[in-house]
Image (cartoon, rainbow, N blue to C red):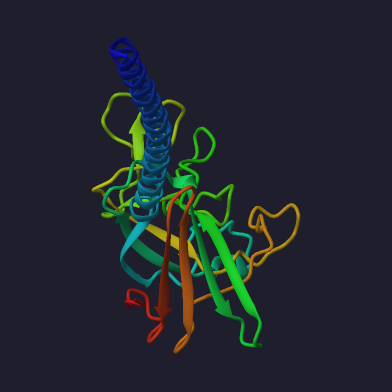
Length: 263
């Protein structure tokens, strides 16, 4: 009888051990599944956070900060008079924009900045004109550069970005630390990079050249509208950076005299 009781007691202990082992294995499996879910969720949240941070940095940092805008030259502002006796191609008008890259921006190419001016053409129909911040650095070898020296632009809607003092942005090519005078091969190259912390200036044409003859160098390269400065009108200026943010400004023309502020 005593031996039977001992055997039964040992059988009970074995059953308890197997049950505990089963519970232990189940806990390990649950913990493993829970860990996998937590790790997967954590990775997803990290990826989303990184993407959100990158998008936010691009949206906030990769954009243009407008400092001031004024009425620019209202007579041949692009300097492309071809002396053909027709005054129409010498009457194009500009506004002048002073700007810098927004805080946190990386260096960007002038061609990545697209500007658009939208306005009412007076008949209830919206009109727009556009271009980029990248113009021609110089003409052919032996000709003067485009910065107010009278050369004809190849891409007529795009005047080039200048330093805020009106000096051209260039890369010295011949070691004389100067980018002035008559352009010659190897003298200087156009600097198309916009750097953070620098202030720049550019003139935006508010109407295309009016001559349309195919052989005329003043022919617009695109079918542009016209949004020239008009007294008591408001036009909308939009600056879009490729892969970055958008800046919008309302141009209020309380005067169309050259030099008057419009923002």
